Length: 432
Image (cartoon, rainbow, N blue to C red; front, top):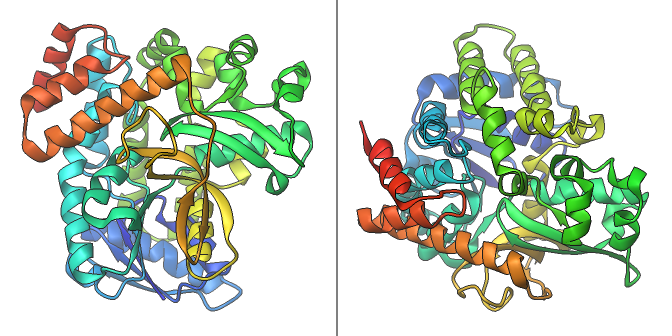
């Protein structure tokens, strides 16, 4: 079975390969990237991983030819970063220069990233349709919900978006309750990087109220430490970690502006050192990855007093586990419940049928089916509707070149407080 990874020279690709080497139906991995030097560096890391594997690791092939990479693929992982980390630093700094959140998926930076990425993602989807029409596309490319929705215009339900944040939240809540996460029935609903865990049921009994009432247990959940226990109790739900940027927007902006560098700038400098290095590829990559994991959302944890990441959270891994669980299920393994980014249909009332939402689904040889969920109401529904409207305006602006739609996307985002500022943002992001 052939797996193609788009953005194959990306720094996190070895995480996927390590999981594949531990056991997977995938026999060949094709890495595609537009940067030959990055492909070579990551290829060297994977070669060392394969040599250390206890079983036959998947063969690896690298190419800069998109069509050659896609031909014959059973699965396509989209992990592209259009504009690279240099583009991310611009996305962050332009927003910060206007006193707004500078983050790659949330707020103005996410809109700018989407405007740049949607056309490329749609062209990729068209090549997948031509060369590998039966392939499943698993999208990691951010902003994941927006890019998944754009690619579905070409490939329909064969594009599924993934994120490790919801699964991480469920695992942290289960650990706080002292129950195994695999035995839970989960009520989670929202958009990518904007959702809430509203119930955790064992044998039909919701354990979330017990967790919300337990100060000590609640304090072990990182998302709670980010936004505050009082606010979580007021919500009656556990928020996705990225909702910190909405619920503590002023503190988030202040913390990022006070830091010596943005997250993008930190990663750019860090990864430039890695890609420029020679020899001991796996050792160098591992050292950089450990530093990267330890500093994830560091400014938010510092500003909120959340403290260091839990050792268990760092060790648990991330999106690669979600992706390979999905591959196993779609390849004939046991069906499993997973939180995924899929076409809404009628799953979340109040959102358009074509909107991509993040909800529990049943994945198996049949495909991916969203599970019934209780409706969103009140402020949660309003926030989701507003952000989804921004995402859809961004997609249309990216595909049509409409500056009016791009302006509307910036101006109507809940983290942008003025049409005049939105006009300035658009002009700044368009500046060469």
